[in-house]
Image (cartoon, rainbow, N blue to C red; front, top):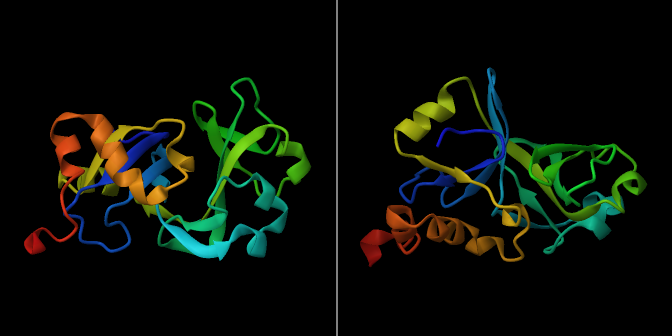
Length: 183
């Protein structure tokens, strides 16, 4: 599968970069200028209510900011799901009923439409051809996203869950220990 907006990147078990080891990245934008996404399974200890209080009531548990990636960690990106027929002001579709929220929009415009929201500090970004080269090297596996992926209550399980549902060789990787040499 080619990397496309709305797909997931699964970090290969051999990924050495500590920013991405055992991560799942949701691609939010791909195109002629490169790719941008957020890491879905790196919660921080910082409560959303302490940083973006107006949005705290809409956040899916856990109610913390997530480390979206190593780029611009002082910027926030919000991903939300809305009911299938809604396209509220301040929301842009990424895939299915999942999209991006403009955190500068008044919360009241989105509060009735949003059923789950997660906020990420920073993002992951790749220049033109960079992500494709990393995929070619075997650093990432590209798979379709499912609606619940960005909002899983226990994000620590996301990497293995996404691998398992792929079946075949990828499913077997879900059981690989973090430190195979210690096995």
